Image (cartoon, one colour):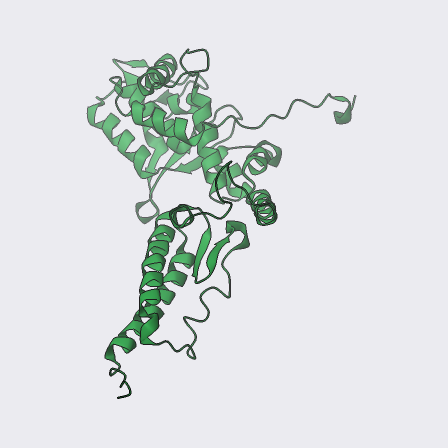
Length: 329
């Protein structure tokens, strides 16, 4: 028998929590009465640990590297390998809360190899099991009011927190090699699922195609104009440019336009007092566009709008400083 003779197993995508569910669940976790559930779930969500790895943590596994931050040395677990994971502020605060109330415990034989281990999560001399984590997730779901279509509480399991953490990192551009190391995967095939789930290249190609479709086919609800009004345009998620005779709504995938507001920032541009009201209106719009881009985190768009604002303000100052025109007698 050869490897090729073994039937290929189903290759499903990771079941990460949707962002709104993730936010609601973690907000409710912060209000749980059970300190262990509150701390354990927070650490799982912010480190990507498996639940067994969490419960096997020993005091010596939490290492402070000074300027390089605090790291977890994740013990041997499901795949029989060790790895290091950085501890972010949320997880560090959770650990601090636990250690503030944790009392000294007697070292206990480790079930894997028998060495005496001072486990992090121990109460009254006994190790804590997985039940309180799952009960805490269930209580958080109920507190957040998350239900399935049949009205029953949404089912959220601890391993979804690991998928959610990894998906978040992949969405923000972490390489497959780095993600593979953090997750403790032994083969790229185990990690590549996250790349298929959140490929920036695939998303950019999709956005570009949709942008071309939108430019060819006016999209409007029944009874509404295909061209948006000013309020809709200012609120839309586009790389917007103020133009005198219409709207520019450049798709995000197309990136910034090299010709946007080129006249207003050109040294040959000359205006006159009769155009001051139009420049004032344009300036008001572009300030809104700059603030909108800044809130969305589009730094290059924020800088572009600021350059136009600076230029328009200079034009208005020159108009106000210019001597009034003489009228013919």
